[in-house]
Amino acid sequence: MNIELRGMRCIARPFLATDAASLASVANDRRIWLQLRDLFPHPYHLADAEAWISRVGPVDPPHALAIVVQERAVGGVGIEPMPDVNRRSAEIGYWLGADYWRRGIATEAVTLVTEWAFGAHQLLRIFAQPFASNVASRRVLEKAGYVLEGIMKCSAVKDGTVLDQCMYARLSPNA
Image: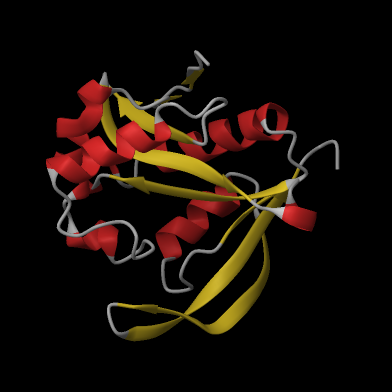
């Protein structure tokens, strides 16, 4: 699927093989890793970016999109569709290189992908589970129209620390 979601600050589009070097460069940052699931590697090498791109590239419609600023892939945003009775729901996740923080780029990318995913994947609900201590990510979700549904106490362990997570969700206008 040839998709390109254009905003004022960024473009969200499928990952390309040529994005690997840029992704590896911006993703190899412990500050990013500390806010993500453990399946996001650290350190993050070129081989990790290449493996990711080869895994998500063929999916149609895509589940993962590159966040592109000035023709450079500087992050990612994607959805993970849920199975079984939750099949009309998906979890959204995102990350952005630190040099691009606090510019509204993540909010724009999350908004673009959320609105697109409702239609492309026929979803009723998209949710996110940021760590409660990740105030910046929580603000991204709030600015993108997500609503805090609750706090999940002691629900995650990251880097040896037990953390609370927040449950945010946004419902489709057709829900």
